[in-house]
Image (cartoon, rainbow, N blue to C red; front, side):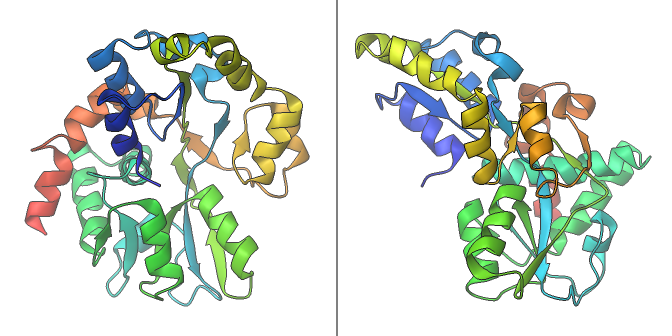
Length: 270
């Protein structure tokens, strides 16, 4: 499965998708801007800013947590090998990068000190995989690294498939509220006479029945009643929203991930 940005590019280049479900609102914004196949205010067309479920960034470590990793500050210790995807190619990696940056600001660091902190995290990553699934394979199947920066749902899936006797999830004190959005590509859906069906499908994601299925696949449901039913699966965390520290996705993309942004500056130093 391709990353969020690559899937958005495919739609821009003519892929006839009626619905998109991507990691970043920014990628759907780009589709709207470059193709006009959906309105620029697409996030207002469905509840919860068109995000029927959420996730966050957690740490997946090997059983027993041999490197004693508990919070973001532990990631900059010497001899810690972090596995993570590349923010230039992976939506999940951008969430992880912004989670680390937001943690720095949340803990009272200045912008300069936060950038230095994130640089130390990046410097402990021996290789950047192109996508989140590749990073998970590197950590889980190839046995490389001490900690994986992972979607919560991906980490829970690892425990489910491979057993809690091999890995465990560490929930940092603070992380980011990741809100992967959905949207109807309205022109495509209209051309395919699928507008009504596409609308019903996405609206159906907010029903209690669908919210329970979402939780069973390890995403956090946005329905508070359903979320409460799964409280043992989803521990309480301090989660900040992207807008708390980065204004919006367009600004975050420009400042951190466009050519010459903070990630490029840090990576060049590495």
